[in-house]
Image (cartoon, rainbow, N blue to C red; front, side, top):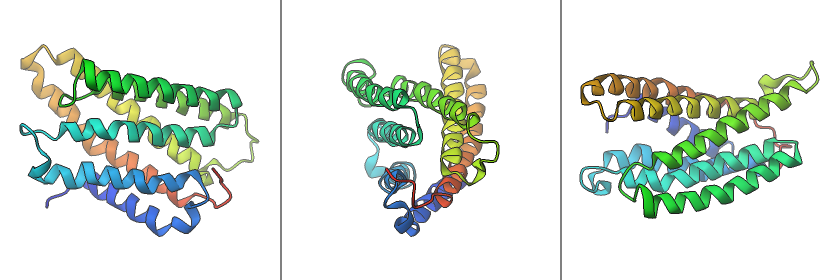
Length: 217
């Protein structure tokens, strides 16, 4: 099984989350263990096993993965935020996301087509949440060492990942009706997959390593 470097990064994150379980288990970051198990299954195992392919595509698995991604990052940000208003915003948007996800997969884009509308819905919210976190961070005492804060690294990981793939889908929509521009689109996709996902999971890993046991759910 030939793996890309970003897939090794996903495996490293999963391994770290399991090793650090005693530190994570009283924090919201313990959710990283089931989340990363799903990530590794979808992105590493299922992508190399033909059994999971239907019509030469395992896109349906990615569509099933999307709600787990949304719920994980939403709950992380809900825990990070100190503002009650922002916490309630997360709660409300989870409900709206769930309704939109079901509507999209059953009536709009379908089960076997890439549900990029759902991903964009998540990306917009996660970019917004990241921005709100950094605004809250700016209000902290100047002596505060944010480099030791797992929330900083997780928010940065989310911001880079969701911004990068938002650019990808923007380019996709721009070029989708222009077959001659396919190669340009493919180059951007490979760049995002190779560098953005790798950076995302390296920052994810740092976030796990900087979790403190007093960061309760």
